[in-house]
Image (cartoon, rainbow, N blue to C red):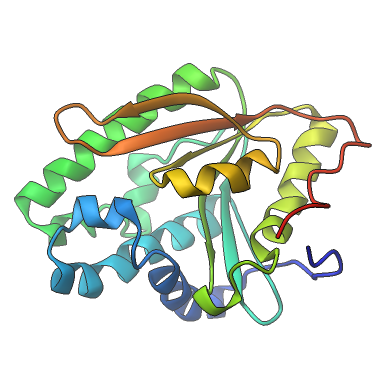
Length: 215
């Protein structure tokens, strides 16, 4: 783990590079394969879609990165941890699924309905929502992902608040579990076959170290 890795807020002028980074980090992600099954179309539309998540969180939450922009962590804060229709329209996030075609748009709306339901069931009260975490492929495995999460995890611990996330990749579970997250839901989007794991990290005492063994 890179204990000394500096974490800083993402600046608006860095959005373009953050779009590229998230596109690369999510290139083989199950979510994009679900939304845009065709490889060529996925390569063209995927980066813009995940990039808009960064834009939304920069507008309505917090986005953390490193000085060299090796990765980004996109959070929505307590009381605003569910994306809103107005927010998605203002950040143009809602227009991205329309580019997937009608079938892709329907897959998107089904996924959103499912994830909103499990989010509310898993965390009925205020929480920090980790909507997106991506690291440059060449920099993965160096502890950057854990470092990017650290500021909000520490703040949540201090304030006694849970953190919540969803992942569509089973291989991500051990990474998040090492940082205190636990699986609270494991299911599929109805009739769609997309498996979604919901994870919650309850606040921990200040002396608990969830970063020491991060690869």
